[in-house]
Amino acid sequence: MAKRTIRIQLNPKLFNPIYFHLEESFANPKIRYIWLYGGSSASKTFSVVQLTIKEMMAQENYNSLVLRKYHVDIKDSIYADFKNIITNWNLGEFFIVQQDYIKCKITGSYVRFRGLDDSEKVKGISGFKKIVMEEISQFEEEDYKQLRKRLRGMANQQIIGIFNPISGEHWIKTSIFDLEELTETKSDVTGQWLSREENTVIFKVNYTDNKYIVGPYYTDQHVIDDFEKDKINDYNYYKIYGLGDWGKLRKGGEFWKDFKTERHVKKNPVTQFPAMFNPELPIHLSWDKNVHPYQPCSVWQYQIIEENGVVKERILRQIDEIALADPLNRVHYVCKEFVKRYPVEIVKGLFIYGDRTAIADDSTVEKGRNFFTQIMDLLKDYHPALRLPGANPSVIQSANFVNDIYRFNYNGISIEIGDNCKKSIHDYQYALEDENGGLSKTTKKNPITGVTYQEFGHLSDCKRYVATMLLAKDYAEHRTKSKSVVMTMGKYTSKNI
Image 1 (cartoon, rainbow, N blue to C red):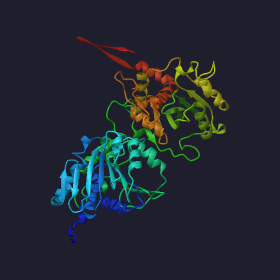
Image 2 (spheres, rainbow, N blue to C red):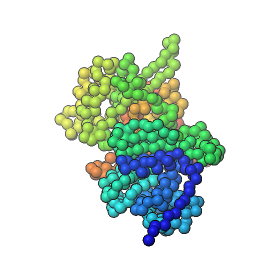
Image 3 (cartoon, rainbow, N blue to C red):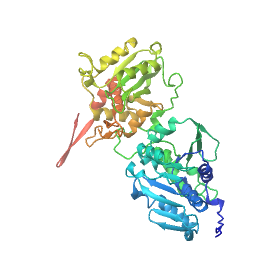
Image 4 (cartoon, rainbow, N blue to C red):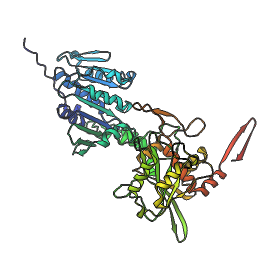
């Protein structure tokens, strides 16, 4: 029996530019991984759905698996897009639409929808042509690794990851994007890159790539105005959901309440040395005794700017970080890395800061030695000076001090963080307050090693140690000026602390 041919004409104006780039990549058998990221209102998911529906109608065995981290999120997100597009294109008679399953009557091609509550649910996926991971930033890296291994058995199988770039320290960036040798290609969307092996393509889009937001098909002035408002009132939100840049949302409860990347993070390209490094100033190394997820050490310099003998500005700059993970998460490896980056002949003085409690004898080394004696010995050629307080600074008071520097340049002091200090910036953004206003000690378990560790706060501690010791007089004054309010029935009192 002859096959029945159905011709369907689709208006090209239905599609945004990213659709045509995806169409080319979906058809390319050399490409295994397609990453689509950026801001909201950029037609990321919508374009993937449009293309999937078209290919389902054109090809037999064009079966797709759509995944969300949690099944509850499917119905009102990408599944709804499939239903709406089928309806709006008047294609209802050609599709069977059921819960978590949509099938094309013409070709038999289908799409299934699943929530991935754990990585064991990715078994039995070899028969799918495409795996679409919507909001892949919610997935664990292990989920993605399992999918990579299990998707096999036919030509042109691909994994498509769609997400908003919520964190520059997310595994997608650190374990995939940063490790690929990428070449940027000319494109009519915000960004497009191809890996050296030509098996991975990355697309970046934002609302300016959507012709139904900025024209010419339609101009949605309300959406544009909303983005412009975010640009003024919440730049970090605009950075992520407007521009589609890597960033971090502020959700409340942040430990560093007044740290703002757009204000305090400065460009600091590294050639031989970081651009912010001043060879005329000493280096201040601040340590936290810890090994998981890394051994933290932050590198600082302090500059006093005078004019006609009058101090105009004081700047505490973090120019670098050394945060080595296992198996290099030991003091001697960190010191070796410091020597490599900053040879003794170019360092004009070295000061060591850190956790006072680490000066106690360490059972892991020989008697009479501790965390700091190791550092001092390993860096002895620099003739370092150890600067430790009589007792560690109060977590709350030191945080208030640093936050006031961030907020209004307390006592004319400013803090600048080099953009090369990626782990530090991540820590400063994600460290949270506990219920008492201290630094939350929430832990995380490494799925591979089984080691439980405090994910955030170590580099934040390094910052507190160096700020309160290097700026000891300012810190003491700030503590004196600070006041607490004591509430009692019927009257108000205050006292100095």
